[in-house]
Image 1 (spheres, helix red, strand yellow):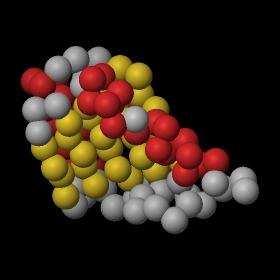
Image 2: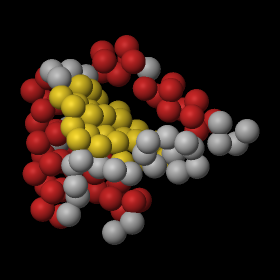
Image 3: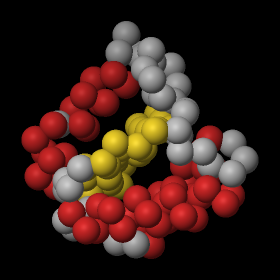
Length: 111
């Protein structure tokens, strides 16, 4: 399965469990720690954990390897090697301006 198919599966799983404002950033041509980054809003702390558990429990048996995950009440980031998944509350997403940071990285591709 290629990376785009894996991303599609991740996005579908997040959407099925009511993840909101899902965005995928393609960073293939950028000097960054991952080739793709997925951002998704949760509805709150428990929902953040539920989305993460759903991904892990569904994807691990399919061969995805969760290398490292860092968890807090408001934000979970999972490293799948070539894919990073950020599950966070809308407040944290806005506070840390992840879209702006990742969009700036993508803009540097065309320069």
